[in-house]
Length: 271
Image 1: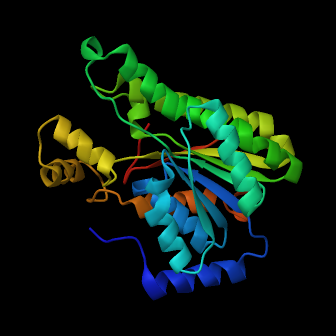
Image 2: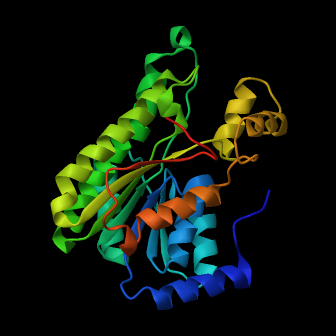
């Protein structure tokens, strides 16, 4: 499995992105300590943006921040529970002070508490809703104030193909379906301020989260992903960089007339 771009190649793309991007923005990416979030944070840095890497603990962000900074980008790490209103307000305020007013927001933070419905506990349900759905709400509410003031903004919310339904994931599926409705609503509300909102619904992406799913059903990760790839039209599973590429587009100047959309990045059609 290839690692994210690093070293001279990443440095060259970061510098090129900074030069090409006449208007550098401040971006916030939640759940960016690893996996998809880390890939998105690094991609936005390549695009020339300042990036705030948010995860539950500041220490969890260090590897991502280090890679961006070593490549010549500008990034800070912030620890915050996105489901906690006070923590979100403090985190966004810190970003505004240290990097500038945030106008790009990627709501990626997520957890799994998979179980069949009759085994699922109240805590299983509440924890997933708090991070995925409440977290997206709290972060977007905090950042939209800066976007409205700037009369420019991009919100990118991470959904999932599980929004279409998936055994053992009543909580996760409901949260990810909710993300799609939330995205479409804020696209309507914030569009007049030149703020777009779009959602990415990843398919089978090689991440630690999917590794946990494989462990839950007692299947070796390589076998789990290999079997999944057989049902994907392009013949492979996805990488975090595939999702980062979609996020880069949605966060770009060129995507200003694209809003309220759900993009399934799954190697084939989903409905």
